[in-house]
Length: 302
Image (cartoon, rainbow, N blue to C red; front, side, top):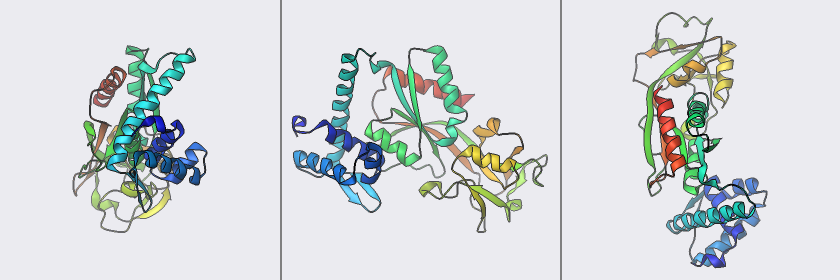
């Protein structure tokens, strides 16, 4: 394949599709029509002489050839962007690292790590973005983030089945906790028994793949009553503080709960644990990425 025959627009569109997972989402992000995105992908496939995307219900997946093309496209686009910055007299991006993180990591872990890095290496610029696990994994593979902080629940499977497998490092593993209003009958002095969670009203995240009913204690032997749905963890905890129901949260968020919320352990039933995982593509890290990874390790250990 000769990249000289491919437009930069087609490469940028392809990278966006790889990250977003659908032609429709890529078109919306770029401000294009879906047909325009389809034409750019078709032009890329004509030059490559092979499909780069596998069309599936609900989205697309990179083919083996598409993975190769994406890796090369990222390198080309990064060089073009670097040349543009140099010609514009802007500083090089050598000191920049891009971090993706799942929602609850933005409450304590990410701010703490970024603050540490600003103190120790002020020349390093950290750019961050929040996202779900599928979005962040696609962003890693598309080269639009360098590191991703992901949440993982038992049985702790890899976040995708693509190759090469992502390098994953567990930053922390802690028990799941229960958040209740301070005036709730369960807000006593000790742990809550899992049997006492039957018949409770829950505040959960909207159903979305592996995040289905996040906020309900796992494994309840009844159909839970979902009183409120909210994706944002602070919104869920604020609803708890208002006495609207119960929700779950990682132990790492206990220090960030608002007034009116009591955080409790739950005993009985299977041990519910959650991991915070640092994921990246295999291979050597840039110096800024390595520095941020170390700051994340320190922050998770506190």
